[in-house]
Image 1 (cartoon, one colour):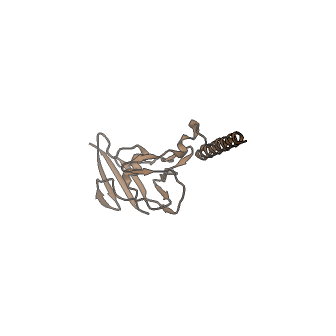
Image 2 (cartoon, rainbow, N blue to C red):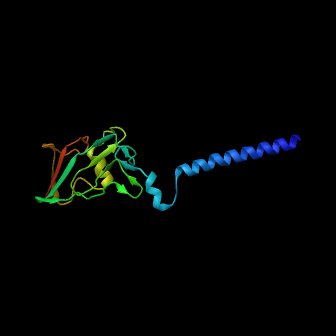
Image 3 (cartoon, helix red, strand yellow):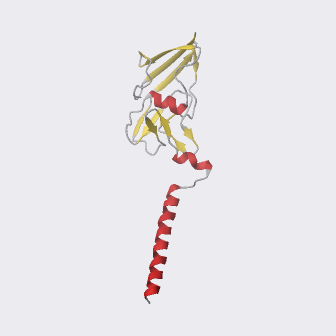
Length: 156
């Protein structure tokens, strides 16, 4: 009788451990390559830009790019991949940067450039950057609602 109690306890223990393991596996979601972006985060400078889970904090700075006086469109869907919309992203080619998160993380323009994988400087061009009309060459300014960011590139 004592041996059967030990076997029963072992079976119960193994079953419990298996159930806990399976629940953890299912909570992670599918692991195929099509869904890898769902839990992916992108390193942006010293901050991480996670996938969007809440829009409690929601602002819209505006980016305009001029190259030799001609407007260059900011691409749509920067920061949007299958299974993940990052907290910094664009929807259209209108230059509006969407900053959406559960809290104000103090994202800076350099975070957006990093997510876009776009350098601020362009070879063969000079850059004049203004933020709300003030000259700047530092991309580490905090993004704010309604902010006007202008990048003017001119051939050297």
